Amino acid sequence: MSLGPHADFIIASYAVTAFVIAAMIAWVVLDHVSLKRVLGDLEEQGVTRRSRKGGA
Amino acid sequence: MAIIDLANPTRFLRLVDRVLPWLAAATVLAFAFGIVQAMNAPDDYQQGATVKIMFLHVPSAWLGMMGWTLMSAAALGTLVWRHPLADVAGKAAAPLGACFTFICLVTGSLWGRPTWGTYWVWDARLTSMLVLLLLYLGVIALYWTAEDPNRGSRAAAVLTLVGALNLPIIKFSVDWWNTLHQPASILRMGGSAIDKSILIPLLVMTLAFTLLFFTLHLAAMRNEILRRRVRTMQMMQAQTLAEAT
Image 1 (tube, each protein chain N blue to C red):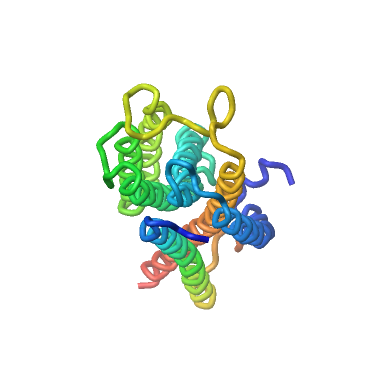
Image 2 (cartoon, each protein chain N blue to C red; image 1 turned 120 degrees about the vertical axis):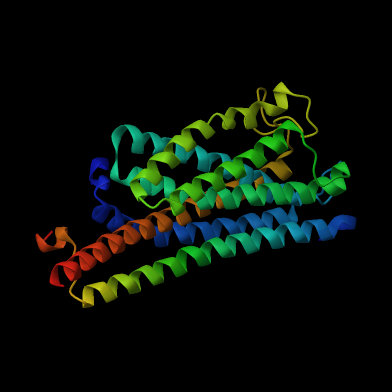
């Protein structure tokens, strides 16, 4: 496979896209881990949502 | 499970936990297949190998617009029906739509330099896509900076519906004005103008990008529901502490 005389532009396009997609995936995954940790900490401290108190 | 049951965030979270691994696996497979197809696609007779940039540019342009369409439906759900998940869906879609619009603009610019001889021109299609990115940033700012989340959500929903006027401008800009950007070549009367050897990889990559969008959107919606739970619990904790002192 030859990318021709404009290989730099093609490689840059794929690199930027891969970086932005990786950043989106990292944001979603790290946000989830962080929120789960905070929720766990709050539950350990005995804080319970009202809907949970009703047994739902 | 009836569709109305999904209005319950707990049931929705259960569904997301079940669906997300399958969706993620389908996304990986579609990307693996799409990238192999894209790399093996022949050069275009005019663009040469830079046609490979189109396999990123076209799907991200589609998702930039689809993201705003989804947010507009969610904005209606927020303002008219006050659906509990509509606001969550809108807020979760905004950063994703902004990222895909950004990819569209950057890859378009990198394609434009060797093909048109310039990175940027202020033509109607390019400018309306840039306006879409700015609208995304405006909505994100409203969602994330409002002191009262409910007021922020309503303001973001109103801006989303106003911004939806930009969608037909983007779509028809190449017909209404004399633009450097080429007219529609996939969805047009008389069928696609693209040869199958390029059209098939393009459609596979579009499917892969779309699956990625929905995978990330469901995951971001799950995060947003958890974030609201954290906020509620922190407020309850603060209230309990205030009452104790």
